[in-house]
Length: 633
Image (cartoon, rainbow, N blue to C red):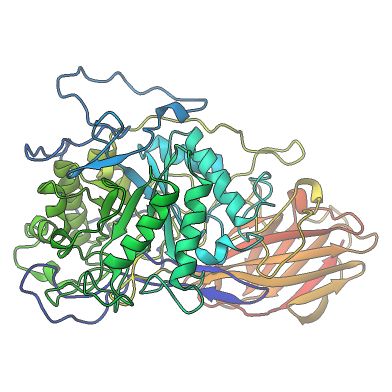
């Protein structure tokens, strides 16, 4: 899936989008492809669902004697004769001992070293493939809080998208130093190390997903002019070496959603994805032979029909990926509902009863016939239509009855056309989605974060609120699929400012708006040039960090060169309808003007210091470089 908008340089924006592919049916006999399905849009406010009813999901997965039984929440297949498990109790401490260790394949199954069936129950947490080079949401929550939430919901694996570009960067732009003080100064590669280690401590596996070559957009092929095949393979070998012997890293998703010219076994080395997967897979396993090699499908099938980007594996059974190290290949289609793109099977009169046949013909046969394991690498929906709910109910039932592994898209609520498993506060679960996934995930067990949320100078811990909802996109020529720093007590981060610098922080409790001591005179505003302001010994620079259809995130860098300390800043935004979230300041909106006053750790600025504060604004338009009015207090 291709996702969303991302942070760029000061007062600039880079939007990334990509979607699922093709339009024609994946069933044999379908031929003419149609226009590309777009997997884009922004998540709407409010709870998931439109009020339409749907038939209840089965309480337990359907059984299929020809396939392995569905796994328990831990991933291993349950013993049908075993007594019912006792009620779940909260888990705390290091859970690394619960990891399965190196996995391999056996026919249509993924298995542990002792041959036990293991079902990967994953979820994508995206952001490291964008210009932020860090998982989104770390501007609102801690890494510990996010991982504990994921583990509590019953997932056992993180699918971690990244870009080759981010691997070479020296800074990230999406981490709140207040929530994640140990992460903010790490390079993206060091941050990946930290995520891997933290995931391990929560009993979570990690699948590394090369989601994009550069951080701006998804590519149809595994290489681009800027990132040739040699660089793609070299980076995979580097990561394989880096995590050799690391039990939490179980697999590598070689390239996200091949589409367009990508073919399966066509013999043209410039576009033959199957052959490229063999070259990269052998290179990875030569360095680290214990990894699973995850190979997605293509958009255009040999029959002439098309399906989702990365979703076509109808030809794989007769032309398998063959690697020097056996029993390592897992095939990974992506699948989405009609809200993402109106594939032909959604208009079939037999819908939704035809869906199992579509999946069987396209990729399910690999697991059902014991040819190779399948991991459905992405699936998700906002569940806002009857059709989407029918699709969701059926794919959950299909995955449960076949024992096929999966990775849900996504943890992030800012996935434009699917939303996420949590609401915009990055904390509250989407109840309808959690219930819909229940047959696959079980009831879950509460897992406590290892580290408590920090507090600002003895004040209460920050309270995360809403997050941006940038757009993402997938299709046969597209597919489905920000932060800054703030330091308590006004202490500025040691890290130098860079283009697209972090916009960090979380909203604090309390009434929004300027705070003036009773009886104090009203300060005189000082308007200045667009995007910047100065007043007495204070100056401020406004910069746009992220934008999407329904709003934006902006930051202010406020510097004190003398004796002033308190401050208020305002800018005009006629399209603004609400200030959703702010950090280091409290904001109010009146008559198209946003007015923010330093608060909490941003209340006072010591002489010679610069602080970075920010706000998330719901708006029908995004100001590029508004005039800022700054008032010293």
